[in-house]
Image (tube, rainbow, N blue to C red; front, side, top):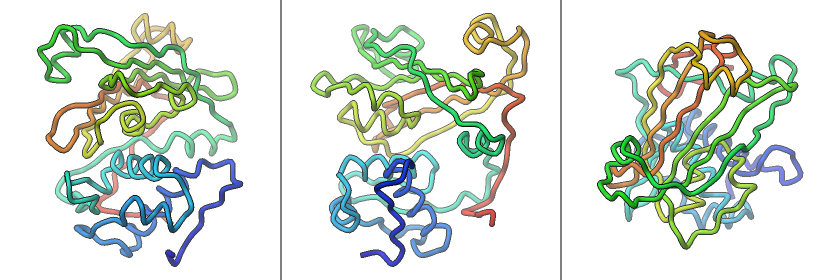
Length: 251
């Protein structure tokens, strides 16, 4: 068993998130070092008494943060901190909203299978005009105030069942893991400043030209094939940017 096992199965905090935070702490404390392999899925399952899907969801969370990466046929490894670039990230939504004394919720608006248009075929680097994607759209709110919305696309695998409760999860790598045959191994995020257009204003119930932060994320498999893409639109008055070097952890 691990020296520090803080998984509380009776907590309202999702088990996968607790597990991800546990390993994040091990990486930040140097107990798991860059280049070192993570325990196998089956070992984590046995040590913590959780399902394999929960483990994959926790690993997907760490992949999304750039803290670990998978190598096809070899396993999952702790990534090297990127000290040569300034990496900006939106503050954790849950933390940001809870600091204001609010509870947040995610409302799924749409979930359907679509045929990829030219723009999406270009993003996914696919020429097939019959290429299908799973499309999700959701709104994030607190105290009945809409604060952000997200659109997500993942490659559609016909044999995979689509479970509605899983679609509420904002984690794009997990949506890919749960609803396709692909394994997320790396991601890229691009952040832009923008102002609200008509559609943004309508969805978020804000005025035109309101400041926004827009984050586009692309998820890749081990062959650097795009397997997921999302766009998150945040109200600019609800977020701030931070920059940390390496695995810095604020005490």
